Image 1 (tube, rainbow, N blue to C red):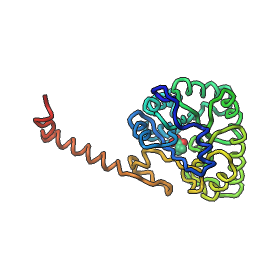
Image 2: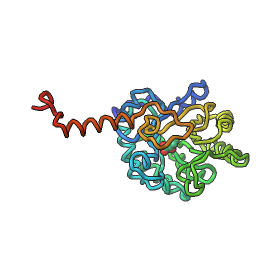
Image 3: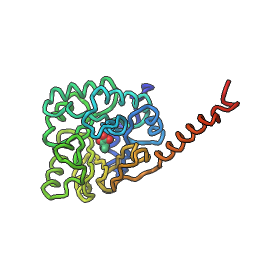
Length: 271
Ligand code: KIV
């Protein structure tokens, strides 16, 4: 449902149809009301309230510190703006691994308190019990394979994943397991394009890529990266659609100058 109580246009069923019809799916992250409003207006299919909020909103080095309360706060803010897109919320680190009952309770909390449409979990076979448990109460689940930032301490780098044959095979098996468990879509992050193609061709559910090449069913980017608000992060897959860092910096500098020079406010800007 939208914030006005109307049923939203985008559903997991519609995403499935898009895959079948070869229509590409556009997904972006959002974390707050103002930007979610613009993203909604732009005609996006899926908004991800990503745990990348830990990085771009809170300045943490990894996504691990963000809490479920903080994710719910971001999701609530996004939900107040959204009318059409499907809204997926990342389950943060530590809220679903190793205990499927806790995973279910945490997913229920996210859905109840944010009124979002679905949750996303990172991992394959090792979290399948949690995925299945969450699905038992009708909460749609999106999977996430390849580079899984919540496991950064296990892998040690943000390098391209699944370049070796055995890793690619595991990733494909994980993707099949997630589909069989009942996930409505999966995200593939930073893997070779040919592997992205293979997974998208094998699965019946939509496969959304971030650095997974052009043969998958849709694309997702982190909003702050594609807007050029972040300027130190430049992976090969990232296309910047704006240079907002410089735009904002120029505006802030001009404001400081105007205030210091008593040029703001002028006669027309006061009562
Ligand atoms: O948290 C996030 O923004 C994500 C995307 C990178 C897919 O999971």
